[in-house]
Length: 137
Image (tube, rainbow, N blue to C red):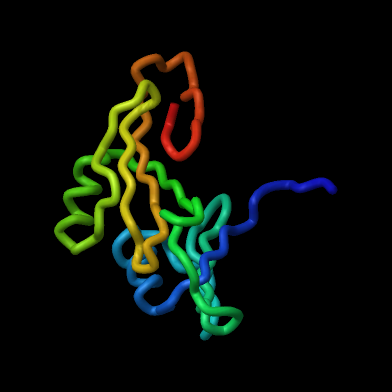
C-alpha cells in the first residue's frame, strides 16, 4: 500500500444540519461539497466529512468514550474560545499551557471532542514536538 495523504475524517452524526452549523457556521470550515446525506468541509488537506449515523447504524458513544478527536490550529485560542462560548459551545477542557503552545477542548453537537491548539513560536528554529495522547507535548 502507498498512502499519499489523509483524504478525510468521517464523522457519523445524529443531526446533519446541527453538525453543519457547528463545523461551518461556528468553526468556520468552508463547505467543499454538499449532498443530501454527505457534507465535505475544508479547503486544503484532509476534509471533515459528515454523514448521518442513522443511515448506516445507530449513533453510539461519544469521543469522550471512544477516543475520537479532531484537532484544529487557531491563531488566538482565547478569542476563539470566547467567541464559541458566547454561541453556547460546550467546553470540555479549559486552556492548558504546554511547551508547544496552548490547547483547549470543546465538544461538537454529538459530543465529539475538538481540540483547539495555538502553537507557541518562542523558538522559531524548532518545530513543535508534536502530540502525546490527546494533548500537545
